[in-house]
Structure formats: structure tokens, C-alpha cells
Image (tube, rainbow, N blue to C red; front, side, top):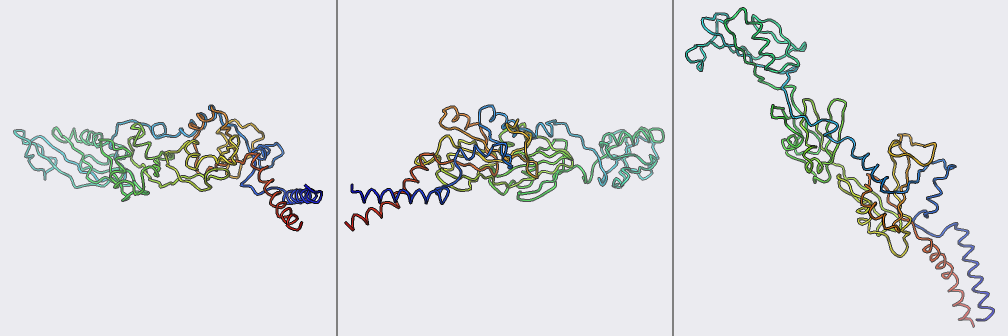
Length: 388
């Protein structure tokens, strides 16, 4: 090679180096593994926590996700008692053995047989705002919080000394309080009356006509007083323990929640990818994003960016900085060069709105730099050789 050619090459390389330094970086899809690791420095005002994913970390996070299932939060008791409430309408029937004359308008009971017991059916009565009803000759009685059986015993006790062997039956004629409200992404929102059978979560959904969206995209939320519990519908279907009995006043809400994560960097595709409400593992997320791109990915640089609850883990950096809503910015780091990490990836659960990022390998950055240099040098060398 002539002296002129060598000078041209050196000049081209120098120009490429100047170009590289002037741009401060070669075009890339995101930060390198070393840049991400440096973001956890104590001086970093963002307070990012870098956590290496191990089997222990994956187990702790999975246990955190399991808290609040229906069986633990709402209980799985099967007993149900119809308790009367304000607005319920009841029917009171009173039987008297002859020659009773307390209720003069009484009629013979057609089923009374030889006893010729007389039955009086009082007009339907709605429990008033004070929670009471009024029965002739028995006076005011508290009905709210009582079962029909308890109330009929109270009435019979009041009539015992003024009627001949009174027998009382209290029947709920209009149920205004013992019901469950079913709303959300169901075919038909409804109010399901409860019975002694003890209706459960799936009974409420069935009465509402089922859900309108695919089962794997639906989350079921049950609100009971101040307690709120949510579970994927698939979990309720697969685990009978989560199909818990409902209580009066419960609200069952079917929520259409297409969970998703974002895939960026040296993966097979950069995209927002939906997944089931049941959840997916990191291994499944990598597969759905096309895996690691063999030509440029760094297997030691697999990261999951997430805003985590402040109490989820013991954080490596302190003081722990949080966002305005109390979340901790966390980067989970996975080294896929370690065979053990492939097992961990099958236990680490992805969260909604997670960002999965795979950095470029250092050699890929060198290759891109050399491509820039030779893209500058080649036209100059070609021109010189043509001139010669």
C-alpha cells in the first residue's frame, strides 16, 4: 500500500473517531448493561434500585402477588342466614287452636285436619326505617338483623298469654336487602337475591349471563364493606377454594383488563405485548417478544423495569426513594448466561406495564463503530484508487 493510501486510511479513521466522539455514542436501541448498573449509584437522584433476580427473589415476589385471594380475604364459610333488613317486606301467618277468638277474621286451615286450627294471614308489612314491624296484639318488634325464624319466635312469645296455643310463620315476601350486585363486563348487570343455599362467585356471574370478554382477560373483584379482593377469573374457575360464598351487600365486578408488557432493545421485536390476567413468567415474556437477538444481544444484560411497592423487598440502596404514589423504581437484572437463571425465569412473574429490555453486547457496539469508520474510509480509498 502506498504512502498516500495509508494516509488516506488514517485520515478516514481519524474522521470516524471524530465523528464518533462528536456524536457521543453510536446509534443504539438503549443503554448498555454498564450504564444501567451505574444508574444505581448512591449519587443518582432517581434512586433506582438494581436487584439481581434469584430464586429467593422470585419466590418473595410471587408470595407478595398471592396475598389477598378470596379465600383468605373473604373467608370460605358455607353457612348463610337470611337476616331481615330495612325495606324488606314480610308476611306473617298466625295459627290459633280453637276456640280462639283473638283474630276474629281468621279462617279454618284446610290442612289443619281434626284440630280445625284457625289461620290469620296479616297484610304484608315492610320493615320501617327504625328496623321494626307492628303486629296486632303483639305490638312493635325489632326485625332488623333477625332471621325469619327468630322473628316468628318473638311474635309467638308475645301472643302466648293472649292467644290459645299460637303458632307463627314469618315469610320473606319481598327481598330488598339480602342480595349481591353484579356489574362490570358481564352480559347483563343484575342483583342476585341470596338464599339458604349459599350462592357463590361463579353463581353470580352465571346469573348475569357470564362475561363478555375472553375468560383469560377478566379479573373478578369482590367488594365487601371495606375489604376489596381481586383475582383472575381463570383462578376462580380452576381453584374451587376461591369460589367463595357471597354475603348480603357484596359487589361482584368483572373487570376487562388486558395486561401488557413492553419489549425493547435487542429482542426479536419491539412491541407492547398483551398477556392473560392469570399472568406470565419472564421465560414466556422472552418467548413472546421473539427471544434474544443472537447477532447483538447481551445475555448478561436482560432487565425488567418496574415500579414496585415499597414493602415488596429489602432494597439494596438506602435511603429508599419513592415516587409521588409511593412506588420504588426497580430494575431487575437477569444473567441468562447462567443456566440456573433459566429456571428462575420460569418462576419470575411479569407485572402489568413492565418494561423488558435487553441491552446490546459490547462487541456489537464495536462492530457498529467499525462500520461507521469503514463507511467513511471506503469511499475515500475508492476515490484515491480511481484517481491513481
